[in-house]
Length: 247
Figure (cartoon, rainbow, N blue to C red):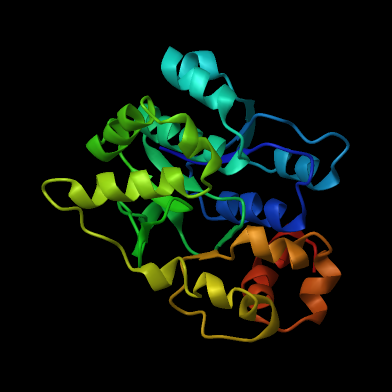
């Protein structure tokens, strides 16, 4: 089984590096695979991530991963988030395993992740942290639905996650959802407390910190920032950095 990430773009920052490094630290022998569309150039954080033991960086090959209809859809997508959603669904449908966003921080053994891990919150079933076996019906059904994605939905940022949510919630038999607070301990509206307050961390397995917003911190962050700033993020990152020799 593998742990997958997807990346596309030049702004791979220290927080993204910690996402990959923390997954590798807790992978329990699983391969950590970073699938890359647009590879960062002259980016020290990305280069460091690629040199981590157990981490493989692979170029995205849409010809082998996606059928023709979804290859065409991928090329028409306007949002990187849509492309990421499509790729993660296809990777898990083909290989099974775990998918993590690059705005996560893994804190415990990923080998203890259940074969099926789905997390719901309010109107959505999250796509930022999930585990499923290859060929699971919610994956294949969502991919089939995306083959008929109307052009207008390409302009709606949440269109894929809403479609995914509907497929998961309509699945029979009903899926069993995991413990949301172990992976998304803070609601996205309160994301900034991750970087400004010390919060209980004993039950957190993977911290998702909503990178769309948290890049405010992670794009200027380094080991010294983690050392000097007492907050939930630093409390969880410090053991990792000590292992890596950065503190």
